[in-house]
Image (tube, rainbow, N blue to C red; front, side, top):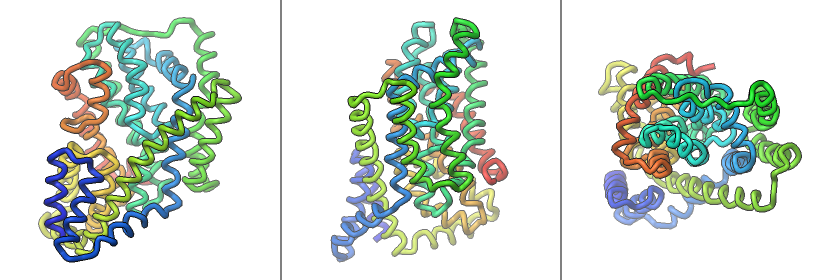
Length: 418
């Protein structure tokens, strides 16, 4: 069944069929050709939905949506300007610092690219930033969000690999900081070359104090999430529910900008994003069932460990495969599709599965700003009204930074193991 499944899946992807539909089409064709009942698909679609940890996904999305649709977004940008606005290319640095802080609220690179892009790119262009450069900064820096807890891709990897989501969250902090720091210095160097202006937030210590005080309640949410999980106070699912309650309290009692309209819009956004993720999870479960039944992960692991003499070569091969796949599949779909296969290979070569998870997420996040799919690339280029070729050219330094961080995570285990 495996060959027809893969062949039909790739054909459907090539003609622009959505990933989840392509997965189901491949499985249905493989079952039909093998003479097996189609009822298996319905059963496999239902099975992954019965997961308590999976409830964390919609609640973290809801918490992030509630926070970022209110005043917190404005405070976040202002704090970033206070911290780094006086550097050359200050607004570019604001995008990166904002992504680090935003990641602790939303866990979604797409939400980050849209929210910060709409807030910053028009201002950057008015201050003389090339459109392609603004789009490049936004599309690359938004991927820091998938490493800073709570991270939706890390939750998905934890579900398919049976690795502790708490360990993944804690291990994602340092790689996220490394990635953000590398991008920060890239923008600083390029800003000198392009002679971009400084953009400090004026007002002195009084404005600084008022903005910090205003933003503290929202900025405490990632600290609350990590602290609660790290000390075993609650499970990730329980913490996600508490995060929604915290967001409602902060918006309603501290910022006083909570309205029924905002709650309704956040609920709709959560439903749409959760539906898309869940459909991919359900579809990928059918493929995983077929591959497991055919013993593909075990055979693949045996072939890989036999074909490559050293573990470092296996790791390099996995990275190359992920870079290619990430350019054609969205991050959640790629994690769910490759996760079970790579976990088997990782266990065969003795790599820590937390390290493997971070390696996968960093690697596949590069695909978010790489053609031809590049979700954050197209969002950012659309906001900036920049050409894709122009934006990709401006992205070259950011690709180098991301690849360097990827190599460090792949070959320096202590960066991701605690």
